[in-house]
Image 1 (cartoon, rainbow, N blue to C red):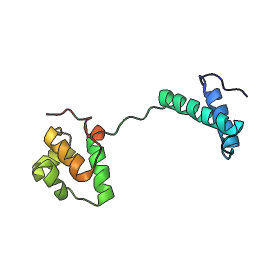
Image 2 (image 1 turned 45 degrees about the vertical axis):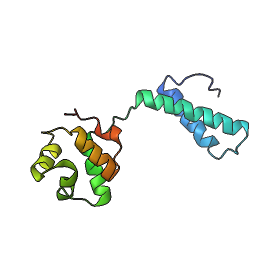
Image 3 (image 1 turned 90 degrees about the vertical axis):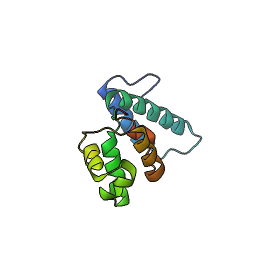
Image 4 (image 1 turned 30 degrees about the vertical axis):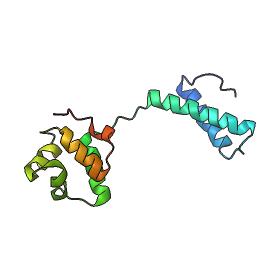
Length: 121
């Protein structure tokens, strides 16, 4: 099957996935490897359009990092301010400030893009 066009239907998408599975072990430098690379790009484009993934909200990003680092809400005071401020942020009653975002980026290495979803005050 030739894939010299964009994937526009679910059937084309499914067929492309099946062909990728067939070509998965293609040897580099072969026509099959080139076809595999092309199909992967088409599938990524189709998925980006049809199955978009929203960026996490800033609180989810922070909580994810806390889980990774085994941090508690008390540990967040140094980045967000007082215990009550941490609570307000986590209950979505207060937005992150630029200062808080800078501390989270620097101290916890949370990407700024993940934190900028909040309206900055």
